[in-house]
Length: 282
Length: 250
Image 1 (cartoon, rainbow over the protein chains, first blue to last red):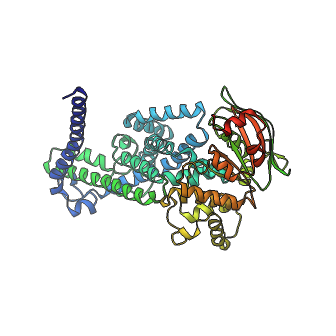
Image 2 (tube, one colour; image 1 turned 90 degrees about the vertical axis):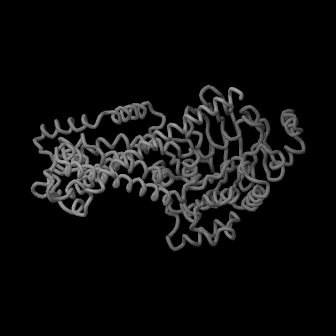
C-alpha cells in the first residue's frame, strides 16, 4: 500500500476513535444518571417542594429547584439576548472595519474563558457593596453576564456567514444599514441566532458556581425577585454531599431532570431552526 | 443627446491601484448603454459608482462627479438610500432576500412606504409580470424565494428592482450565472424595458453587447477608450484598441 493511502487510513481511524470517545462519554454519562437516578425519580420529586426531613431521605421533591433554575436561566438568557443581538449586529454591520470591534471581540473571548465561580464572586462583591441579599435578581444578572459573551460570539460567528451580496441586495433597494440588518441579516441567520440563544441558555441553566453566592438556596418556590432561589445544579450538589443513599439517589434524579431539560432545549432548538430556516438563502 | 447620467473627471482608487482614470461620459436616457471591455478594465467599478456601491468596499477613494439628471450624487447632504432607490440593480448572481417570493417584490415598496396595503397585491403582480415571472409563480407566491431556479431568481431580482420604481436599471453581467435560455429571457426583458428606463449594463460577452446595445462604452485598463452609438462603434471604431478588441485580439 502506498504511503498516502496509509495516511488516509490512519486519519480515518483517528476520526472514528474520537467520535467513539465523544459519543461514548455522552452515553456513559446518560447511562450513569439514568441507572442511578431513574428509580428515585417519582412524581412527587417533580411536583413537590422539600418537606421537613427531605435531606434526610423523607418526603418532598425538587420543584423549587426546577422552577428556580428555569427562572434563573430564562431571565438571564432574556437579558443577555437584549444586549447580544445588537452587539453582534453592530460588530458585523457597522463596526466591521474598525479596530474597536476587534477589541470588543477579544474582550468577549476573555470573558468567555473566565471561570463561572469568578462571575459568582464578582456578583457577590457588588451585591455586598449594595447591601443586597442573595436573590433571584442577583442570580439572573450574574447568569446574564455569564451568558453574554457566549451568546454574542456565537451570534457574531453566525452573522459573519451572511454573504455580503445579500446585504448589498437590500442596499440596492435603498434599505438603510439598520433595515438591512433587521430584515435581511437577522432573517437569514434566524436559525443560527436561535441556536446561539439556546446554547447560552444551556450553559446558564447548568452552572452551579455562579449562582452559589448570588442566588442562594431555598426550599420555597420563588415568589419575589429579591428573595433567594433554588437551582438544579445546587440541588444536585447539596444532595450528593449527604451520607444517606436515598438522598444521593435523589441527587442523580435531579441531575436526570437537568439533563432532560437541556436535551429538550437542544431538540427544540433543532426543530425551531429547521422551521425558521425555510426562507434562508443557501 | 439627452444625457441621463453624466460623469465628470471621475477617478477611483482601490488602495494603491488606480481603477478608473479620469472618466468623462454621458449616458443617454431611455436606451441600453453597454459597458464592455476585457476583465479588470474597470467596467464594474464604473457601474458601482452610479449607485454609490463603491463606498461599500474597503479602502476606496473617489474623486470627480457623477450627475443623475444634473444632480451630483456624491455631494454632501445627498441621501444615499434615495440614490439607490432611483437605480435598480441586477447583480452577477441573483441574491433573493430570505423571504417569500411575494415579500421579495413587496420589500422595496414597504420600506419606502410607496403604496397602501390594499394596493400591494396588484403592484406585486404587476412587477412580476414585467419581469416575466408571474405565470410561473402565481400559485406559490408565499413559498420561499430560495426554491426558484437560478434563472427565475434573477427575474425575481429584476421584479424586486423594478418595484422601487427606479429611473435607471444597472446590470452587472446579469446573465453570466444563467443558462442560455434564462439569459435570453433576461435580455428580452431588458429590450422591452428600455422604453421606460435608462439601462446601463456591463458585459464581457461581445455578442450580447451587439444584440442589446444602443450606446456603447469601451473601457481598457481603467480608461474609457471609446464611447458612442452602438452602430458607429461596432461598424467604424475610431480607436485602434477598440478595433483590436472587436476583432477578438484580447
